[in-house]
Amino acid sequence: MALSVIHHLLPNAGVRWPLYRVYTASCDRTAVRGLLTKCTQRAAVAGGLRLGLGILLPLFLLMLIANEVGEKEYFAVDLFAMSWVHRQAGDGLLSVSIWMNQLGTPLATCVVTVLPPLALWFMNRRPQALFALVAVGGAEGAQAIMKRIFQRPRPELWPHLVTAPGASFPSGHSTVAAALAAVCVLLLWRTRWRWSALWLGAAYYGLMALSRVVLGVHYPTDVLAAGLTALVWVMATYLGLRRWLRPGAGREPNDGDQ
Image (cartoon, rainbow, N blue to C red; front, side, top):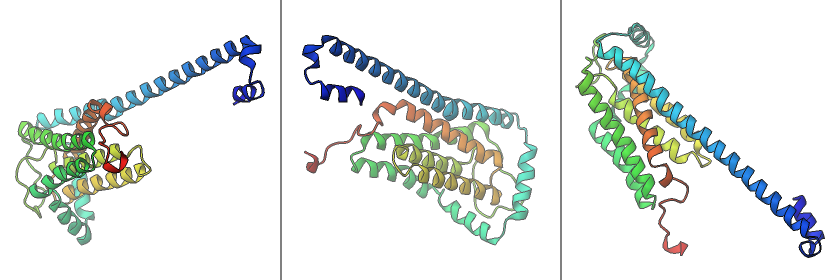
């Protein structure tokens, strides 16, 4: 600001006082270097947070839970939490839980996995479409593989209110819900909808996770591991495709933009 005022007051400063030109050029280069240094530092901090909080910490917690499940150990908190939830659950929560169960049927899961990428594709957001497809579909595939590996039996503390075939660890319903929520948050993070996406996504995953415990078809550690699995996979996919997910990347111009 000060340099622009001086330049306006002294339009011929570059001719009459060559030292002024040298001084301003030096200041400009210093300012640019300082700005680039700050941007680089901020990018490094942001990248470290994404790697640490988005992948390494969730992966560490997931490995702790998986180790106990693999040794056929049961968490005391699982039984205590399930018993407490079962005592507190009323008819309203049971009805909501049964309705949430329908969102995890094979048909609903297919729609959730395919529809958002298709919508992004037709909006000319091709990298975002690829990210959504790989993130949600990959998280779903990861939990299916984990079910086959660990083969954890489902809880039998009370009669199940819905049909739930297959192994218990981790929860497939909760994995898809968490993956979809994480994808929406990441895609909307640079918009004014970031906090709405964050709170709605957290509520969606939380309600889905709670419903699985209320229905008695999953342990709390099943739904927790599902959220961790989804977070690790989605964040790893995001970091791998990050350079193509920047604002404006992959967007094909419409006829009106030319």
